[in-house]
Length: 523
Ligand SMILES: NC(=O)N[C@@H](CC(=O)O)C(=O)O
Ligand SMILES: [Zn+2]
Ligand SMILES: [Zn+2]
View (cartoon, rainbow, N blue to C red):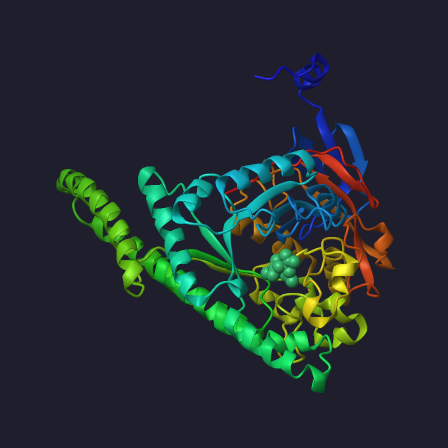
């Protein structure tokens, strides 16, 4: 038990004092103004009555939202820290209103062994000022099982880099690892492995790029050719295949940076199918329950008990059997429900390939910005689970090497909240949908149970926003090392003015205060 200093015990003894209170706060979907108090990094109380604390911050009737959570960042640490690091990346996150990020495995070395995973945990613990989850890379079954015990947020597959015939094996290995780990720990479904995919088909990309390069002399290969080289079809084919493998192996699937209507429709269809199966299962179990109670109680009890122990035996055997059956046959509706979830980036939401005219290869990213008519828009947000910024920093020099050799990727942590608050001011989305897309759903879908909402007992993670503040992004004020964005001349209305992580202020009016220690978070 760590001994805390006497004065803190004294304050605790008095019982009244909190560590922090946010007074005169506006909360989404609640009328009036609130006091939100914090104790030991957790939300202690939410009240209309005044609350006292060591530190009192007057929010002056601004909105206090749950701290933002980004499930898709590339902090390039270890190995590529000249582009970004957990220090610069987490400072950028704090500046953008984020209190939690989940980092991608395409570092050097790849985060695809238990050893490299632990090494990255250490690096992040030392450098990150926001809480962090980690996605794992892919490896053989043995390594996957060792990493799975460290509770990665998911196993990430870059389908644009994998041959189709290796994908089936990857999904199969993840489902076998989940089954084996849970049968070793049979008391509960302790391990729930999730796959996240970069959904673009490698073969289609290679064929189209080859064809366009050959025509270089005729077409001159403008930056927009990148959108033709990685056509929507590459995403549609890849997302369809990933969903079929998730069904076949009963594994939860999260689709990164969805960028086309067609692929979104396919994902929605499967989500609806799973929802219907889930409801059928729920009504069946309820039906069974009513049937059983109708029978006489007494005689039933003993038979029920013997039956129960047998049924539990059969059930475990059945689930394992159905899982085994799953591997080779098509899904049966009795199978475990696998969740299909989706994310979209700010650039695929708000930009299309027209922006290449102005920003050239600065706007080059994977998947590419879509041609008008193929792209998604703010009106599609109701069908998408979350925003994942795909904060993918590179150096300016790496971004200016022509259409084929420039590095793909756009940094977004310090622009996304202002971009979405501007949409709120335009009336195209509600303020509540920002919390749903950037806090509640990422927390729920990636199992971050202490995060995502302003509720008593949850982590005291907040972002205070000034809905009225207008301006243009000034790259000199950004903390990311990647000083470029296709949103440079965007006129925003609304910005983060304070970020609080576990009760500690980490950003105040655009100044990041770096004395906070981010912690590893997982499902
Ligand atoms: N999105 C990108 O264009 N680039 C990502 C890789 C990826 O997510 O494909 C990166 O790590 O740079
Ligand atoms: Zn990607
Ligand atoms: Zn990415």
